[in-house]
Length: 232
Image 1 (cartoon, one colour):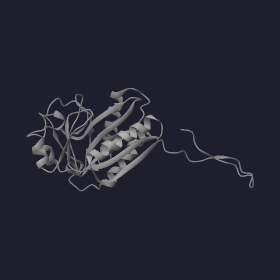
Image 2 (cartoon, helix red, strand yellow):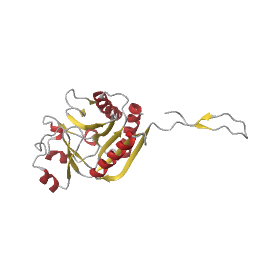
Image 3 (cartoon, rainbow, N blue to C red):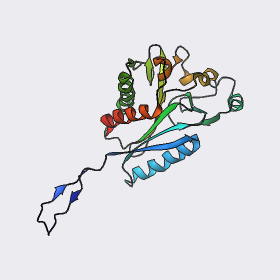
Image 4 (cartoon, rainbow, N blue to C red):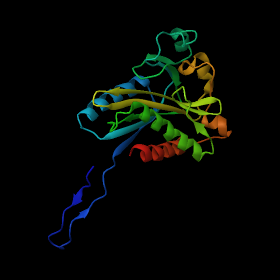
């Protein structure tokens, strides 16, 4: 994006100097707990506006109120445990989403990131690996060895999954949906489903691995830094 230029002053005779460039990616943090339907609708609107070049690339972060979602890889409700009505009785919503992936949980203490980007490269697998690497680098700052599983999308610590990823690509190569990083998530919510359709791995969180409280704003800042290094 070309830098804006400040005009020269005819009074002082100063030459034009470049102004600081506008950010290539706008970062938005939604306050409080965001219902999944509201975030989904926001993404659709941002995708439409990005496709029409009405906005720049945008990175939305939020925490959701409790919700179970099923992605396009889910052919039935077999990974929803005792079923949708049971999950709703626990106090969670249930959505069949247009993202990639299978069943997962979103809720308080989990940082969800939704990048709305026009992909310069049409390498969708490369994009997924880049999202994983963003989170691996954040985990490294906490002294944790996150890794990419060769068969499954997401990020693991040891033998447990700490971050899920599910995305969508719209016409014009605009990305939406994204990742969910467990920071201080109540992991018992995952006991009611088969997360991502994977039975052989459990789930974990940043606080579970570190054995201490981790402030969410601190994690957000590290994620933004890592994300902008990769995509900004």
